[in-house]
Amino acid sequence: MSRNLLKSLCLATTALTAASLAPAQADSTRTPIKHVIIVVGENRTFDNLFGAYQPTNGQLVDNLLSKGIILASGDPGPNFATAKQRTAYEPGPNYHVETATTGSYVTLPQPYTGHEFQPRSSDGAFVSAPSSIPDSRFPANLPNGPFQISKYAPYGAYTGDPVHRFFQMWQEADGRKHDKFVWVEETIGTGSNGNPPPSGGFNPKEGGISMGFYNMSAGDAPVFMSLAQQYAISDNYHQAVMGGTGANFQALVTGHAAYFTDWTKLDGSVGTPLGNQIENPNPLSGTNNYYTQDGYGGGSYVECSDNGQPGVKAVADELNDRGVKDRKCAPGHYYLVNNYNLYWNRFTGVTNPVGAANNFTLPPQSAPTIAEVMTKANVSWKYYSADSGNDQTRFHDQVDGVFFPLVAANDTGPSVRYHSYCNICDPLTGYSNIETNASEAAKLQSYGDFVDDLANDKLPAVSFVRPFEAFAAHPANSSPALYEAFLDTLIKRVKGSKAWESTAIFITVDEGGGYYDSGYIQPVDFFGDGTRIPLIVVSPYAKKGYVDHTYYDHVSLLKFIERNWGLPKISKLSRDNLPNPRHNDDSPYVPTNSPAIGDLMKLFAFEDWDDRD
Image (tube, rainbow, N blue to C red; front, side):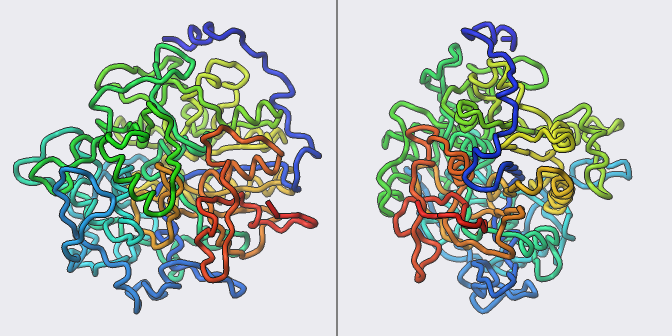
């Protein structure tokens, strides 16, 4: 179905108006912030990047170093055993979130290469390293606990990719013990894809890479460290959904989750996915935690209002045990909890196929989004997602001293696929009320357009920025050093623009990528929360060197936008309806009024600002 045909289904095509693209009026915000820029990289937990961070001005931070799990040298600390990883036996017939421990690892299994990239030549092209073999840079006898990656592979080098899927992440956290990250990697990894276990035994070939961290005390992550010292960070900010990129980007625009629809319509009618696309984490008979139906070539939908559906009761029991009664699951809805392609294709102008067993595409969505809320209130916005084409040359001078072309002329392999655009990271391309409306679809633009808008003083009130895949920090095809390079250049450009004096740049990642994190996780609803991830606020109004302990997740970004511009909530199911958390001194990370998430206002120093609910 062509984009033009889809547009003809609309009652009318809204004309592009000056009002819809103009920046918000100066007096329309409740704070001095007139421009919000949200930059979202990928797949790093707070401890993975900030595990050895030492804050300034007597601030406290909750990380591996402050807990004594590691020393500033990166070596094991006096409390190293508190991060010990354990084994379990989970034969079924039903999936469990908390699994019965059978023992502990003596040493961590050696990390594997996975599908990591390595530089090939001076022109910046890439090839894959030997796929899924033990990574010889790492020893085969790492102590059982967090280890410093850069002691073995230089900071900025490519490494393997831990598992980061929905039911796997619930098991990794193991209630509040955080002790099954490695066991989940070894037993199910990225999924079974509905295949029977191999006769020789199942090996996901990931090893113990999930326990790796970078050491700011030893010079790793210098840009992140400098930003933390100059501006404000949170050490209690979380991915909104257990699982991967796609579901978390959906939460960033809806405050909730996407669901399977009748793709023959554009009205959001509920549909039922084919059986192979429904998650079934129940272990197959005779295996240890080998899921029946899960993986990037299989299950990703869950009907989470029904305890009879595979895996649902286990998560519901976990929520009940921790006092959460509302799962936020509409009856009959099959929610997407992992990664599927989105319906519209920005480059071909046609839709991705739906309806066959091997069509792993989220059907068109019509649920309300923050974009719709902003448009109705005349708050301008754009979603800038790294693009191909002209962005390649435009980006050449964007990252000081670093150039990796999106598509190398002599390369027909992985760099073409990985070094430009991420479909699941561009979530609004899945929504009919965006894609079939000319004025709304025009706001889905490229990073090059962000650079132009900034230079020409045309930045909208709210900008979402998704980096090029090569610079997004995703393990295997990027690194934190490349994300730092992207951020450093973006921040310099913003600080050199007219917008800087009224701007807040929120820097985060979509999810933790399956890396270990020692921080508290609040159960909010069926979908999460998940592990802690970094959040940095760069703004003239950010509290200098501040570490905020208030509980936040991705929907806190939406709460900030709503409060700053006086906007209504997105929907009845969206998490922006949750109250701001209340904390006490004895337990500064755990809300006393759970479930609750903050609106990020405490990261700022505004004169005459009343921060009460």
